[in-house]
Length: 253
Ligand code: PEP
Image (cartoon, rainbow, N blue to C red):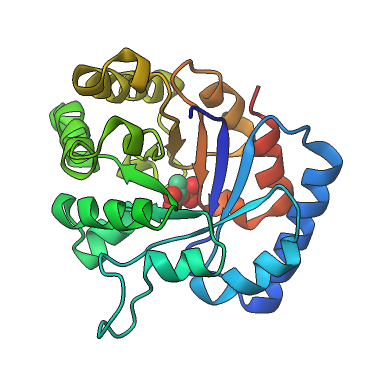
């Protein structure tokens, strides 16, 4: 179902005490200031998921893992499966972040399996796609991003696809302070939606949430989120500061 979502991606940051303090601050601000327009998700490191889940209690804030395995169980030292995340009550998982693609060699075929495992465990995958700078400069960004979406998601049934969230994150905008313009974001989101429509039809495409990620800040969020095909954001650096993050959440119209 198409929903407004603002998800933070804490990456590999914070001690447990710091994580609890940040969660508490976000929770307080969300309770006081956010009137339920967007789903707020915190993508936190694995070791903190259970403790932060207890801390959040019955709050509307949801937790996400930042990765999950292509396997269910077994001799895969260091891995965490979607079934494990499900067993501790975590509803979302970020998959295919550009840092996973770049530093851990994740490709479309692997991500298709990870998406399948997440959906089978009844998690909502937040599937990331996006082009590096040289591809943007070569003008082949639309072809690359539609291929990334196709490789990882187009084997899904319409019903399964509708349980998936897509995050378009141009790699050149991640952690660089350089944001895509709202026009660049809107153009790519529309291309992704149109590509989905070409296989699944307009009715399905119009129900998919497509988030923008890449140096989203409180001062650019409103413009980005006002684009018709931008359904919210995946926020890295700015999600580590409660005030800034909640101001981004409040930018959802
Ligand atoms: C991210 O890592 O998903 C991201 C968008 O990072 P940042 O907001 O820091 O660019």
